[in-house]
Image (cartoon, rainbow, N blue to C red):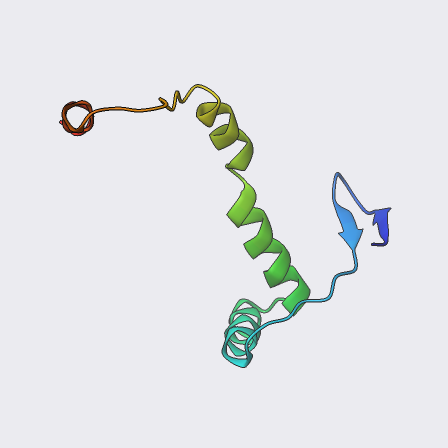
Length: 79
């Protein structure tokens, strides 16, 4: 993977994607509608899909998964 620093905190990387024809068509259509490049759309979609992962990871660290629980315990948790 090649990476180099670009403006700001962005990092440019070269990737190969394997997409279904329909997915690629939709991404190209989105890029055309937005007046943006395909690369810009893919970058935006990628950033949007991972933006909250760090916060979610922090939240998941406080989740306690018991080794076992009863049916009543489950019922009590969802009420």
